[in-house]
Image 1 (cartoon, rainbow, N blue to C red):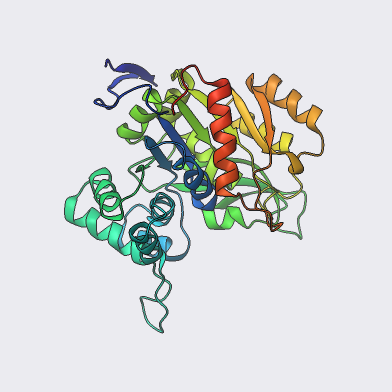
Image 2: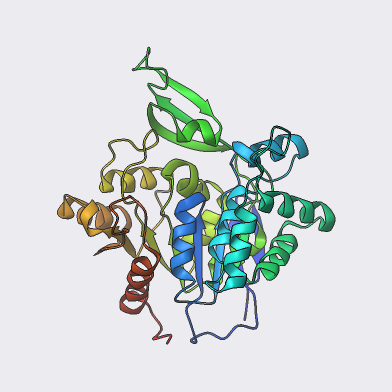
Length: 345
């Protein structure tokens, strides 16, 4: 299998996709995101393919991840841990390890609220000196049904321009720093960017996108988990030139703070402002979360050249959470209906 050349600013970089995997047996899927949104997508996707790679944002600065990042200067491990847990199997081994790495200590001391998986990941980073090798080793220990990669090998800070961040000055636009703060801002997020600007992508993440059959973006916190992937130049270049089909999975409801009051089509509009050259093939949304189907269809077609697929993907308990089985069925149907190859099983 030959590599592909990406033009990255003034540089040319050769990226060689992984070899040794059979094409045609099952779809090669790359899922991008972070937090619980990515976990929901991975829990669904692992049910329909064993060739699955998660590319995870590394801008978290809150909680256990933020403390480890500040103290040790490491990548924030929390979203990587959640992705690994989501890839654990449904057998006793997988579910036991999923609970273990998600376990948080409760104490009156320094270990309070630290997640076991965060400590394990950081320990292996320090032992091996290699982010990807360490995550692969954790995945092997857990029996994870897929691979987890950071989108960048350097810790990133998310910054946002927010109108009305200070309720006393509702018309002023301020710069808000930090993913945790952006996610909870009471104002209207206008745009986001990363510090450092133009961070390097992890080469294995770029290679996975180039070699994929499908790339899945979302669901998740729009400005702090989904859009950041489009702000890494090498990753955006790969998403632009890949021959993979691209599906965007919308959230079930606006997120308090970040996207309060956003319609489904508004989510597409802000995504397009951050990556105007990005094309999509399919936009997936829950049918009950789309009050204006015509406007969403127009926004998807005009902004990204994409078709809209509506399907019941929410849990039946009424909470704005995706049901893994229903979401898996929706992805499987999209891959079959819109894919260039298949069927896979």
